[in-house]
Length: 143
Image (cartoon, rainbow, N blue to C red; front, side, top):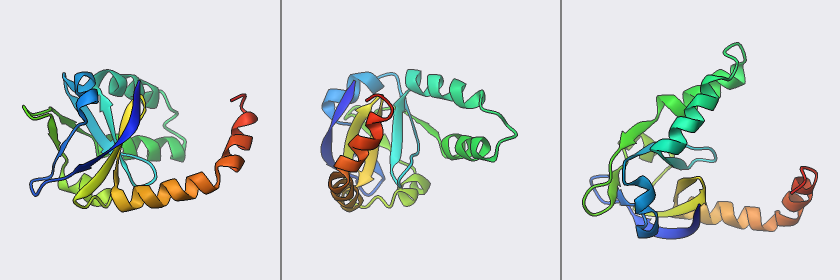
């Protein structure tokens, strides 16, 4: 399980270190793609394959299914960790997520999310203010 949040930086070449405690999960490679809420998602190869199978089964005739498949697949890129545990984040993905030099890497169960540090702070503050409402809505789902 991937949990926790870590501050990192993106170098001039677009490389970003994967937190040490997560590197074993991504030792055989990873997939980086556009996430939701202006962040990036990083999946292990296994998690990506499982998600891809589910997306492939969505009905092609539904606009939302096509849009989600495009969001996930069209921007996806296979990456390998270098000897220092870094991955190269392509320009188009850094631009999509507004990634500046300082980023937050958050473990979210089966994936990592990469956020611009300022955007993460804003998102987190908003979510923390709404935590009671969110909890109440989730209780309707049995959580």
